[in-house]
Image 1 (tube, rainbow, N blue to C red):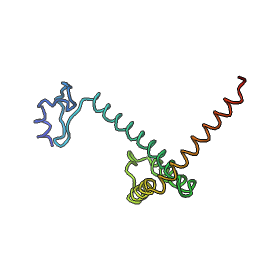
Image 2 (cartoon, rainbow, N blue to C red; image 1 turned 90 degrees about the horizontal axis):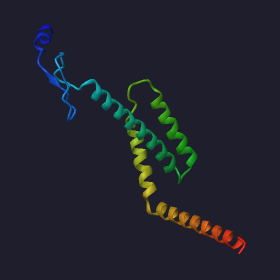
Image 3 (cartoon, one colour; image 1 turned 180 degrees about the horizontal axis):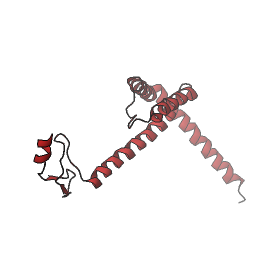
Image 4 (cartoon, one colour; image 1 turned 120 degrees about the horizontal axis):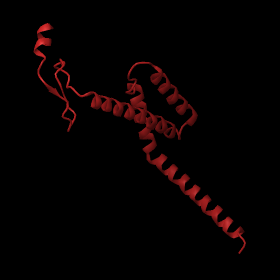
Length: 143
């Protein structure tokens, strides 16, 4: 180890694109070195991405529960994410195999022709109702 420290005098430059910062400290061979600023930036970006993915994932699960017993699937997915994100470990990130399978199944159900047809019909009904309401308001307005 002391031999490494003595030989570690060579200059390492930041691996971030366009950065010219260098160090003469001993750098572990297997790790690409980054200056403090870029290492922090990468860390923050990863953290933000993870947070936004979690937010999107949570919302998607709630929306996808629509067809069958919405409250069950929503409640389930929420409690599962709580369990995982509640841990103090640095990254609770990836969904378990079970969650992956369930998410795939949920998506395929959501994209099935019957569900698509049903949702389109509901959308038509809603727009029809909105149109009728507007017409009623228009007719009710003093002319």
